Length: 152
Image 1 (cartoon, one colour):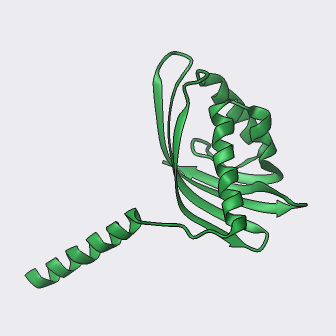
Image 2: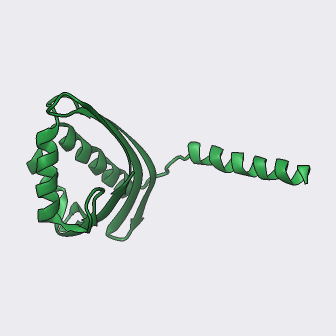
């Protein structure tokens, strides 16, 4: 029995170690989309609503954390507009950890962790540690987010 527990412990530690050492070998298109994710968060950092809005496909449907049901682009932008107004300018910092960026024809699905900290309009520090999924679709030579979901 003791040998079985030791073997299981080694397997679990090996799996956890592999998760920590996750490396991405990305194609040029996958790198391009990952760069768009970084741009997305720069738009958030700078509270650039128009830049942010440009990343979303008109037919987007996704389920942002905190909403009781999926949202279309208009609903998402109205929620984000309120969020941006609550961020003290210059206070937003973020770190992205990519876990998967996969190309499927004209679609790339991205999974990553976003850790962010900012100060709200009341001076309170707010932190976020969210799991993110975005589905990007290339249409007329332009990548845009067509679907997504976020969760703690």
